[in-house]
Image 1 (spheres, one colour):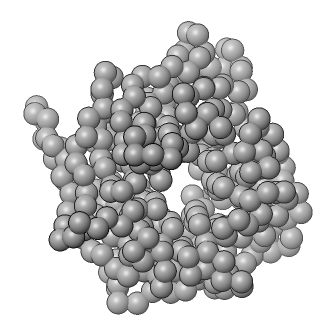
Image 2 (spheres, rainbow, N blue to C red; image 1 turned 90 degrees about the vertical axis):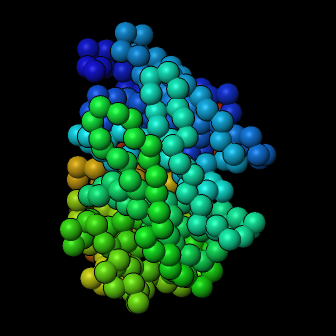
Length: 342
């Protein structure tokens, strides 16, 4: 899709509800397609698939489906070549895998690790492995992370249902786990990190799960809500504390000492997104209505100011940098999605 003729810098979509979950599709044949999750404080929530119409240069809703509880995270399968079925995953009470077609989205499988109890420990987040899209990891308030194996049954000529199984479950933290992310280090398949209510960032290796490495601990033991690996340099990751106004950049080679602190926000940070194509650019978004892009080349010298700032019309809940379209960043605030050319 060539939007360069029109050269609009911002496209906006208004959903019928507050938008929280959000993710760019990565398939080469589905550019400018995103999934949005509602945040409604009741059981019945929704997910919409939206896409940009080339002719009208307006976002349109392709389809809407019901989702129990708000999605804590939404993610398209990281399939840049279009080899796998067109799948979307959501986390909430459970991990669900959905198959998307032009007309409908249908549930392929519900992955539940609490088989022998009526108790459901909600999932705070998950990540989908880029190197091996048959691997997903979930984080839960029950202190555990679970690594799931997915069978997408790539048989030509007939539609195979997707199914999944628990590869491993581990107690990752002393308290709730709030986020999990696979690292691109060491082949990109086996290393992952998690953050949680105990204020620590911990690193794991699927080949040696008997021990983990604490990369960082918040000095005040504030809960850490998000972590995000640098897309180009697997030594760096970013994290942020609950109600914190700064983003901390860590180097796994120098544990426990931040290499940078990005602290221009005037209210709590809600989202972090590294540039897909550059090791030294990162976007942060916060309740101060601002999305800020930083150049961190100066590290370990202090990073004083962002290089770009965008002010939205509301508190920004989420930010996503399009991995296959690095010129575009998506933010959501109130009931709005905006994509910004950077």
